[in-house]
View 1 (cartoon, rainbow, N blue to C red):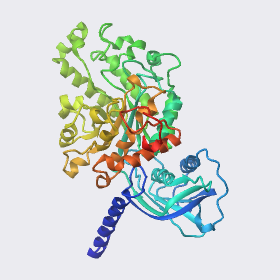
View 2 (view 1 turned 60 degrees about the vertical axis):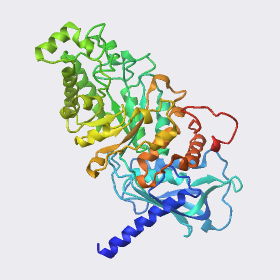
View 3 (view 1 turned 30 degrees about the horizontal axis):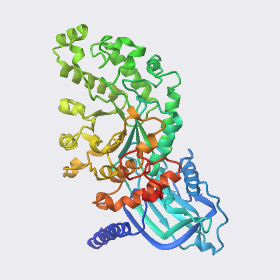
View 4 (view 1 turned 60 degrees about the horizontal axis):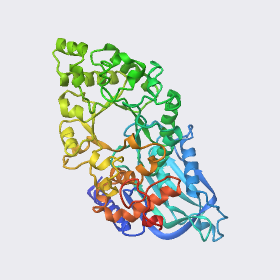
Length: 528
């Protein structure tokens, strides 16, 4: 490209950035904010026969991901409104459908998949079609979600309207990992609840469901290789078969969402011993798992082998947090084992984590561990480790300086079960704080909001997640220069998104007050 071409390209980028800044000051309610947006002032109407066209697309859609995504979005757009025939104001005011062109024939979903899209809604043409171009079907699904936010039911016209046309939108995520953790050990979550959470994630363009499946309290998942493990479930009905886990993975994948399975070791594992008590160091020491017992690692190997047949995401989470190793030293056979190997408690903790990492690697996984592993023996971690920051600030900076990747979930800002954490804090939490070198910034693969389940079940999970998770979702999706410097600038837009979630059947709580709060008085959804 010559100097003139470079100048024009930079000028175009500058104009696009300005267009977002300008439209943010107007009635623009897209969430999360795209990379660039321009729009007009015309109103169009959706045809009652609104259709999907794919002429020129290299993606065959043999699996039906795009077709099903289109059908779902159309249902969401229409809601339960009674739609009448489009007004006869001339065909040029009616959008007949959406034309989607996907450049890649593959629908493999893996970390770093291209999620870029371009969306345009013209005001001319005979007939008029909205246009989407995306590298992959998953970028196209994001485009459909954005298109749905341009559509409104007209209570005067009784049709679906698109306001502020023509629209031109270019979009791509800032971070490749945009996660939400759910916890099915502290409280069992029925499959329909998990699926509804997945659906709601797509509205905010979150793309990783971190499934904290098992913990101290219960082991609800079937492990075919060791079928007594789920004896640790709360009850016979509060369980997931491996086929049901596969259904969750498939359901998420068809919506562009990865499922990250977590097997937290060596702590948080008391429930394992209900079915296999020999992995407890003793009856009085039920966790951490017995580091001296070869069967402990045989069990981990079998679980990860079974995982690898279902959980196809590149990563597996191996926990490693909050490990109290003291009972290893006063359990005689474990203490003897430590002495023979010249290990103290911290050395045994390191031994356990590194051995579990090697097992995971043997099954083709890359590893995510909670930050305590890095804090205690970061230089010993496998280079493929992703460190999951949760305890506080400054850790991500140290992790990437050491050359490892990082996910940010600092508990003071991004723990949804902390009901005193406000949406403003979720919005302002910056994963790249004090990380200035581009090569180190690239090692922060994203962030995650966490819904730990001690006080969360199917009755309150949605209002615990939303709308605060949406505030973090924009932080993780939208380019830094497009983010509001003051959260008050986005209050109206987030309130609009919260009301949109309610209209879609998601029990998102009001913005005013702490998390999961009820409305304080009668009033409009948009003012709460």
